Image (tube, rainbow, N blue to C red):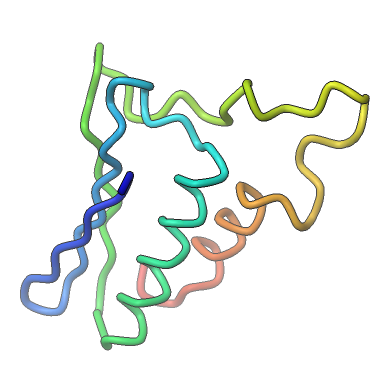
Length: 95
């Protein structure tokens, strides 16, 4: 698992645990983050904190460049997990 979630006093602390790869937002990382955010909201959390296992003072390196399309297609299409994650963070009312 790339994400760990702890809930304390109705606040979810979601930690990205892939510091070795600078917590890059791979498809797997994004899907796990989305799942954790949704679960935290369903458990009536009043706040969500996204933390990171840090490597060289980097919170997240951003998109996993190994997953970028090489055929010239849009790397951030609507249904790409990173875009879905961004919408989830934007839309959840407790963050």
